[in-house]
Every structure is written in structure tokens, then in C-alpha cells.
Length: 113
Length: 108
Image 1 (cartoon, each protein chain N blue to C red):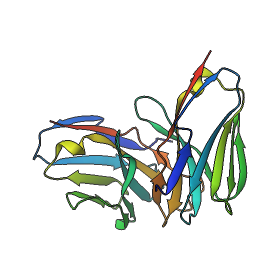
Image 2 (cartoon, rainbow over the protein chains, first blue to last red):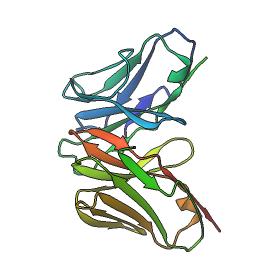
Image 3 (spheres, rainbow over the protein chains, first blue to last red):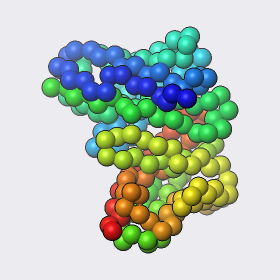
């Protein structure tokens, strides 16, 4: 059974640009959640999607957005990048009953220069 | 005050030692998760608890809902257990709030 796949693994962008990150969940998992990890703030919840609907959102500015497609794949977008957006972005998927908790992807490491 | 507090922040141990990492939280939760993160970033889910105790190999996790406290124990620690261990509480369906992590180093 394939795991959670995040692409790309590494990304370097310039301030002011925008970026789109992709997450493909485990087959059958309909919930995808996104997290940002930085040395200063640790892991923080960004948002969660279930069946193409955003169910929860963390305390991040509107520059951070996401969506989920009918095949449960999810994308997150960050517009007008700032240096502080440099982070490891992780997504996780879970089965509808969450019986086995979460499966995390390997993450996308974004560097903004 | 953080909603999820972990202790200790750093832990060093000799191979074979019994290790305990603690997690306290201040919010209502539907479940508590213990996660392991190795250098390079990948996160592995170790346990999901809503009550009682779970065991997997040399790892044991317990939770006391009334006291809002959980512990992760590692018996007979091994250098390959060296990692950051993160406690996370689950609220509102799939929203996780994370502790700051405990960095464990086990020396041979």
C-alpha cells in the first residue's frame, strides 16, 4: 500500500513568488491535513480537508490556502512568499474512522530567499 | 501557556535504559498521538490513544484523561530510538495541536 506522497521534496523560491505543494493521500483516505514546521514555532496546523471541503483552519494568514480534489489529492498554495514562510510543510491523511491515526508524508522543504 | 506541554525537552540515555517522556495538555481532546521524527523530517505515528494504555514492541503509551496527562515509555532503549518524540492532541475532527517535542539521544 503506497504511503502519503508529497511533491516536490525540496523547493527554493524568491520572496514575492507563489508556490503550490501537492499531497496524495493513502488510497481510501478522504481526510488530508497540512502542517508547517519551523525551528521557532514547531509544528503548527494549517488546515484540513475532507471530501473536498475545508473542515478546519489554523491561525495562518489568507496567503495560505488549499483545496482538495475529488480523488482526495490535496494542494496547498502560498502566495506572496515571505522569508518566514521557509519551513518543512507536512501533510497527513487518515481513514474515515481514524482507526489507525495519521500517516504523514515526507514533507516539502521550502526555502524562500 | 502552551496547550500541550512536553517534558523533558532533551534527554540522553545509555543503551538499555528505561525512558519516560511526559505530555500534559489543557484542552478537551478526542485523542492523543505520539509521533516520532527522525533527522530529515519524516514523521511516524507511534500511538493514538483515547484511554488506557497501548504497547507496541518496546514502546508503551499511557493516558490519564482525568489528569490530562500521557506518558511514552521506551524499555531497553537502543541507539536507533534516537529521534524527536512529539505529543499531539486531536481536537475538532482532524485538527492536531503539537507539543514542542523531546529530543532523545541514546548512546551505545
